[in-house]
Image 1 (tube, rainbow, N blue to C red):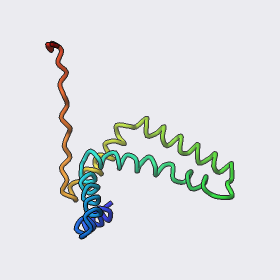
Image 2: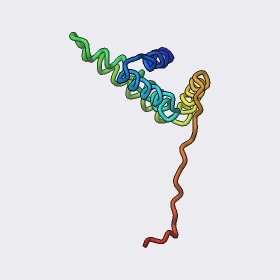
Image 3: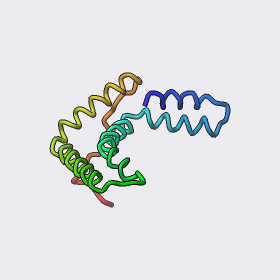
Image 4: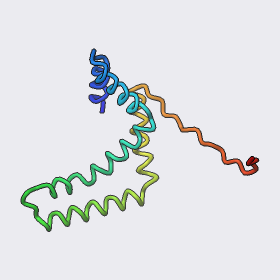
Length: 121
């Protein structure tokens, strides 16, 4: 992730306006806490399914190995769902450390308050 940030920072200083503008936009998005957390969550989920994905992309697929890997992915995802609070704390801690190293502040989005006695004219 750090190398992506470094590359985007370099590209955003290029003379080509279109490329530097796109790189700056992507860099701005990636430096938001609201973006980093889902990226880390998806990385965790995709890391569980990577062995199965690689197996299914082979030309000479072994069905028994594929079924075993699929069962492993299902049990790992079920374990994640069972221990969701603990897993989220671990991922959130990793994101906090990454944000500190990049100088990013994680902020909780403001929530709108529902008004119950609002006049509708």
